[in-house]
Amino acid sequence: MKNLIFYLLLISFFAPGCYYTTIKKNKPAVAPANDSVLHHSGIPKAEFEKYRHASEQFYHDILEKSHFNGEFLVAKKGEIIFEKYAGYSNFATKDPINAGSALHLASVSKTFTAMAVLKLWEEEKLNINDEVSVYLPGFPYQGVTVKTLLNHRSGLPNYVHVMEQLGWDRKRIVYNSDILQFLITNKTKLQVGRPDRSFHYCNTNYALLALIIEKVSDLPYPQYIHENFFTPLGMTDSYVFTMSDSLSALPSYNYKNQREAFTYLDAVYGDKNIYSTVRDLLKWETALSYGNLFKPSTLDSAYSGYSYEKKGIKNYGLGWRMLEYPNNEKIIFHNGWWHGNNTVFARILKDSATIIILGNKYNRNIYQAKKLFPAFGDYASDEDTED
Image 1 (spheres, rainbow, N blue to C red):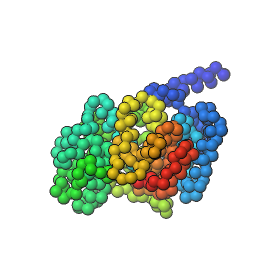
Image 2: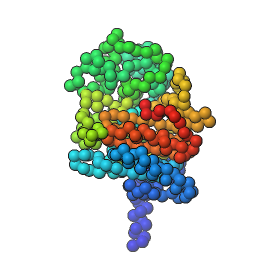
Image 3: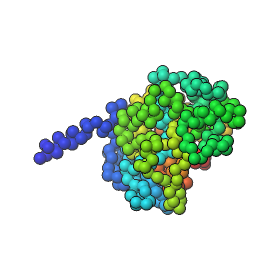
Image 4: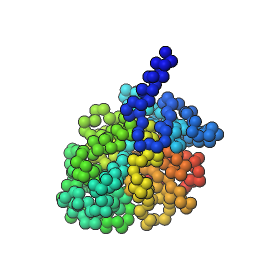
């Protein structure tokens, strides 16, 4: 009987999807969901307990007290320190949130879009210094490059605001191709800044990047992301939302527990619309930090700051926000907000710590994740990390 159990365990360990073959270190051990004290064989016990206590304290003081509804995970070196699931995935059915509940990542989705572009760059299928018109014929704004889309220095206006302002019918669902055509058709009506003059966070940039990915790869954006990231990394609970997911995607709620309605802007992807879990995002982080999914030079480009017009330690790389400290240390992160979803995906590079918070009920306290940074080193900051 013991031999049979061992044999079954051996088969399950080597089953497809259990690990990602490019990860150089052992896959993190994962204990049952909602278990606050998890495996810590790779971290000294005293150190582990310090991180666990700080994470638990943050959860109780910041999240739980603000009626947090969502998923919370803290890890170090790919190993889970603290994990918690709270509330409902659907308030009408009272289904509880669990480790498999895929929530809308909002702008954290941009990290996947950016890295997809950089992967195509590594494969020499595109050049990030090329003008956008090379890949999207008819694009009329000279000087706007793939790189200025990535680092939000394109000068383009945000489709989320200007399409309605210039008369878009809210009864018509907007798709990525509509945004491109809108920019072409309304060139004389739009206020466009000079490319690479300043940082201006803009969802239009990433909607266009999704179109470039499709053009270069000859694959729909959802399929490209699935085949190149979700499948090889074993992110089995992650997907890119399309209209075919309208009935199955988990909804979000406002602070009054009222369901947020589907809007005409909800079909655009690249800037948003990836659904995932904290555990799947830990796989994404582990691949970025410990795998060979990308060349070190590519990651260096992604994690470099490109906007120094304003004083302070905040900056933006290629798809990543960052805090650049005077001691040359960095925290790489991205936040998200769409309807009732608030999200944080923070990575403390030197100390290999990861903080992931996904909420499906509007809660600005989620962005207080920065209060947990000092638990892992000298990372105190007065900078506002909410935007």
